[in-house]
Amino acid sequence: VVVVMGHVDHGKTRLLDAFRKTNIIDSESGGITQHIGAYQTKIKDRLITFLDTPGHEAFKTMRSRGSKIADVAIVIVAADDGLQPQTIEVITLCQRENLPFIIAINKIDKDNADIERVKKELADINLVPEDWGGKTICVPISAKKNENLETLLEMVLLIADMEELKSNPDALAAGTIIEAHKDKNEGPVATVLVQTGTLRVGDTIIVGSVAGKIKAMRDEFNEDVQKALPAKPVKILGLKETPAVGDILETINDPKLLKQKLKESKRNKVVATTQANIISKKNENDDSDDIPTLPIILKTDVVGSQEAIIESLVKLNTAKAQIKIIKKGLGNINDKDVLDAKSAKARLIGFHVKIAKSAESLALDEKVSIYNYEIIYKLLEDMEPELDKIKAQETLRVQLGEMKVLAIFKSEKNSMIVGGAVIKGKVQSDTTIKITRDGEFIDLGIIKELQCNKEIVTEAVEGQQCGITYKGRPVIQVDDILEFYQEKTE
Ligand code: GDP
Image (cartoon, rainbow, N blue to C red; front, side, top):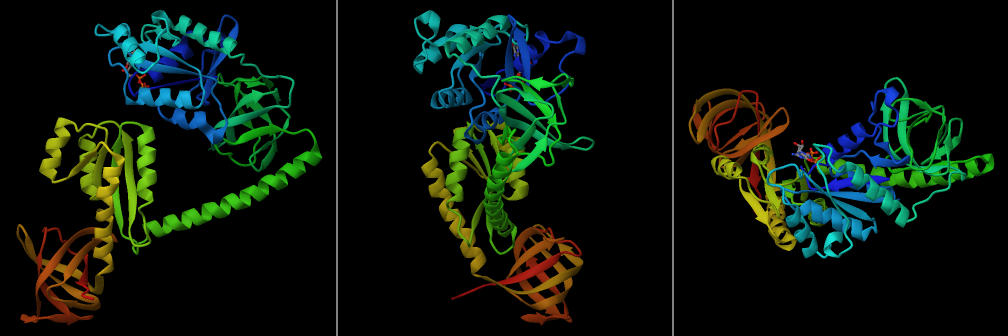
C-alpha cells in the first residue's frame, strides 16, 4: 500500500492520475470511475494499492488512529524546484514512522530540471542517493510524459520484497476505514482497506461500535466483488451508521464474541461522546458573546509547524479571552489572506513563509498588519499581551444601553450625526459605541454629543428619541443597533 507525498505542486496528483490511467487492471470496465479513496494498479502481475488522497490529507489518512496504513511512501520532488519545506517534513515523518520511502524526482521533462541538484540536496540531509554510493532510492520521472513510471513501480515492489510485506489471506478479515459518507440512495457507505484476511459479502462485521452484515462490495471500477484480499480497497454497503475514517473493521463469526465486542465498544463510545459533548459545549462557549476572541489567520511552511503553533496558541486561552483560528493554510501570504484578515479583523500571522509582493502593498493600503515569525516562542510572546488587551477591553466595559438608528443626518470622514430611539437602558455622552447590524459586530466609535428635543443633554433613557454626534468611521446605517458602553473605572 503506497502513499504519495511531497511539496505542493511537485506533482502528487498528476502521478496518481498517471498510475491510474496507465495501468488499468480491467480495461473492459473502462477504467477507474469511482473515487473510493484508493485504487490498485498491476505491474508484473502483482498489485500495488495507492492511497488516493491528494495533498496533506494523505498525512491524516496515513496516520489514521495510529494504525499504519501505508507500507511504502513515494516522496515526490520536482526537479525544477528541489527540496522544499513540505518535502523535508514528509521525509521526517517517514523516518519517524519507520516508513520506507523512495524519492521520485519528477518533472524531468522540463528545461530547467536539475536532477543532480536534487541529489545533492538529498545528500546534504544525509540521504545519499544509491548511484552516489548511498542507500536512498531515487527515480527520475515525468508524471506528465509517463516517463520511467514502470521503474518507479518496480522499485516499490523491490521494497515490498525487501521488507517482506506479507499478510495472511486465510485469517479473519480486518481493515481500516479510509473513506466514509452517507449516500442519498445507498445509505452509509465506506471504503475499507483490507489489511489482513479476506473480506466477503455476507460477513458479519463490527466497525467502531456498529455491527452489520456486508450486503455488497464494490471496487474502484464500481464493479461488484464477492471477496477482497489483503491490500484491496473496497466500498462496502450494509452499514447501519456511517463510520469514521480511521475506524477499524473486523469480521466476527462468533455471535457471543460479537455481543461482547459491541458491549465494549458501546461503553467506549459513551465515554467518547461525553467527551465530545464537553468539547462542543466548550466550543459553543467560544462562540458566545461573553468570551471575547482574538481572530487569527495563520500561514505556515508545513503542517508540523501549523499543528505546533495552534496547539501552543490554544494553551493561551483563558475563560476571559480566547484565540480563534479562523483560517489556516500552507504557503506564502497572499492577497486573499490580507483581504480575509481585513474583513474578519484578524491578526494575520506567517511562520517561515514569505509575503507576496502584491500582498505586502495591499496590506499597506488596507491597513492590515502582517506578523511574520521565524520562532514559535516569539510568536507566542507577542500574542499573549494581545489576548490580555482584548480581555481587559471587554471586562472593563459596562453596557449602559442600546439605541436603534432611525435616521442619518450627516456623514463626514470621521464623524456622523444620527438620530434614533433608546430601546434599552440609557445612553450617555462620552461613552463608547459598538455598532451592530443584524447581530453582527460592525465597528467601534465614541459618542461626543447627545441632543434631545434640540437641547444638549448628558443622558437619554429608554423610550426617548435623541440625536448623537459620533466619532469614528462613518459606517452607521439606518436600523443599526448602537450599544453604549462605559469604560469602568475601578
Ligand atoms: P500536487 O500539488 O503535488 O498534487 O501537484 P500537481 O500534480 O497538481 O502538479 C502541479 C503542476 O505541475 C501541474 O500543473 C502539473 O500538470 C505539473 N506537473 C506535474 N508533473 C509534471 C511533470 O512531470 N512534468 C511537467 N512538465 N509538469 C508536471
